[in-house]
Amino acid sequence: MIVFIARRLVISFFVLLAATFIIFVLTALSGDPLEDLRQDASPNKAQKIADRTERMQLDSPIPVRYLNWLGNIARGDLGVNRDGHDVAIMLGEALSATLQLVVAATVLAIVVGVVIGIISALRQYSGFDYTVTFAAFICFSLPIFWVAVMLKQYMAIEFNNWLKDPVIPVPVIAALALLSGLVFGALTVGDRRRRLLAFAVGLAVGGGLFTLLSVTRWFADPGFGLPLTLAIALAAAVGFTSLSAGLRQRGPLYAALAAAVLGAASSEVLGPVLADPTWLEIAGLALLTVAVCAGLGYGLGGLQRRQAITAAVLTGLFTGGVVFVDRLLQAFNAYSAMVRGRPISTIGARTPNFQGDFWQMNLDSAGHLLLPTMALILVSLATYTRYSRASMLEVMNQDYVRTARAKGLPERTVVVKHAFRNGLIPITTLMAVDFAGVIGGAVVTENVFGWQGMGNLFIEGLNTVDPVPVMAFFIVTGTAIVVFNMIADILYAYLDPRIRLS
Image (tube, rainbow, N blue to C red; front, side, top):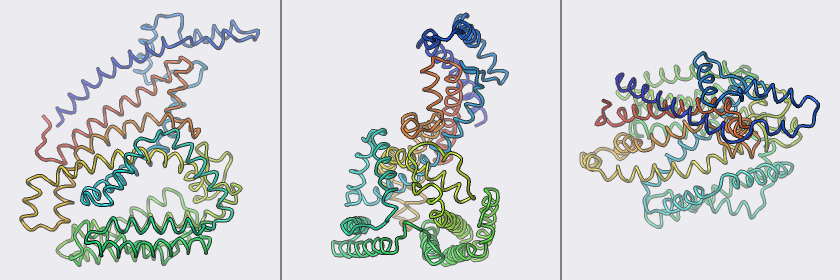
């Protein structure tokens, strides 16, 4: 593997070197970097032209300018743009904004898309499968700029107006209840009577839930509280246990349930710490959660200790996430008043000059991230859903899956341990490309929502015919593509032992 990595790095270095030359030449030939100054009517026009010519080395041939840039890169100097600003500082700010914007959207799209795709494959030709397929094709065909504009209008402007009197109209409650019933019925396996019963249960649950939210005006001052937090944590404990060990294994189930109860109770005990924490304290609590839950799994797991530790740790971390979201929601009312009742923002990465405690500052970031994240997820989600569905359908028809079933293995073991692992191999390539693309930013989304990220840095460099910021963008994105593709190759060998790197 070391030889494989070394060979790939050497080849990739020369590919990147050739690509940097091509990009530099194309950018330098794309226009006149002095065009704006030639139209300048100020008295020091000639001095401005001379300064920019010297700064950008416009009096030298393009190959010479490229070699000078390459020498500066070898010394760790990214240079300055045409206005004399340090490109390294510009790159750091742009990369930070892009990672903040796109990483969360990419991770959520991968997780949710793969889960929906697997469920759709396991429920092939069901109502749920047809619905997911139809929705995936619609989302995949939507232009990102149109989605972004619609989200700004209805999920920000209209939603902020509705929050002043958050009462859900009766027709909307009826539509949401009907949708809930359809989802319950589509997910249910069995005859028509069983699906109709599930539909009725979903209809009643959805109608009751949204009616309660409307009557209590929950959206004006949201929060889970201890009872709902505990209920969500217990449901998560059952779900993680069923995935990792199966509900028949009592040890893992008891460990996960204990982690859920302990996590929910800790939210009250740690109230003073969670009043205004820091990210370091949050990270410390997460590590403590992992240690305590691992101890619970080891102590209560019995003969299934490994599965018990997995179920308990996942339950503990999930419960911690629920407590974190609950604290954010409890701070929503005060934050909304501080931003004049407009908590969902349509532009920028943060509210100018906004100051608040830990939860209010994170709510401010979340309010600015919500719309661009939703726009990116809607498009990416369709891709991962279709890929994971097709991959799982292919794997589920393989001989070794049929053999596993013939041996009497539980369906959970067949799906999770045999089919799912090999079904991830095509998804790995897609994930590697997407994560590399994350570094390059989302040009259209950044422009619509006013984010100063990598995409904006690239477009600004092209518009001003300035190769230096464009090359800084290309070095980061090109290196990311090489690294993530190499990681994908290594993951192939891990996911499928039949694949060997040589």
